[in-house]
Length: 165
Image (cartoon, rainbow, N blue to C red; front, side):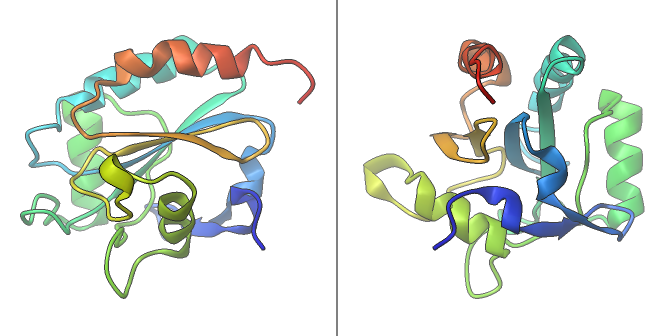
């Protein structure tokens, strides 16, 4: 049985595979993102959190997803350019993935199983759903798309400040 996220890997947006074990000891915020979504301005809040806590044991991992209203139609280079030019994103971007359905990325299968959505639902409802992971790779909480990144800051700080990791 999988007990943390470190056994998973995913392709970075440049196509190189990366093991999530690289992030051991860090608090993670994992987000499925999109460039043409009503929640896309949340990239600003995510980048602000990243800038504020990048020198702490904290990282944001963004996974573009085109499963909701064709809101991420671009290819990888278009996504990188959009994020850089519009939001100055510096946190890690990964290749586009599926978060629902038969082609769901294994990481997202695990995240959804570990932290259910509203009314115990398993499915991701929309882009910018966020998962907060502790320093031991355990899923702590799931946040809905409408939850702004700044609303999660206190939860992030509590996990960063937990000793013994």
